[in-house]
Length: 109
Image (cartoon, rainbow, N blue to C red; front, top):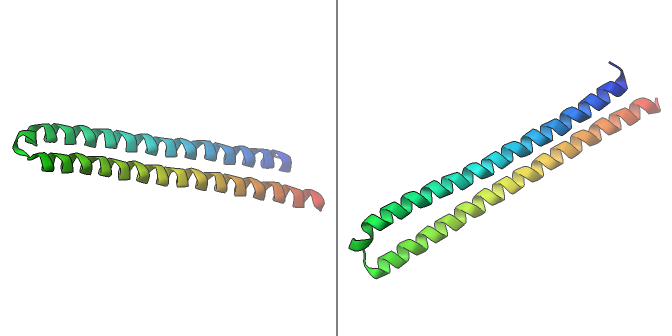
């Protein structure tokens, strides 16, 4: 394997890592959405069963609590997966830069 082949192969590996890592982050985002959907469905079933025994104020408070919890969940999933996407981008960028600089140093000798 020549040094140019090594540089090309290393760059492809870094790009493949980035693609796979972004796929994993996307799967995490999808999983978070599915968990939220399952939790909402469970809450709705339980709320429907308990509704006749609850006062109007308690029903309003419960509905509001569900909305707030769902919003915080969504914000948490979004913030964590967005940060993970940015981290992957930085790692790939730094690794590609290191390969480029190493190749430049090699050819400068």
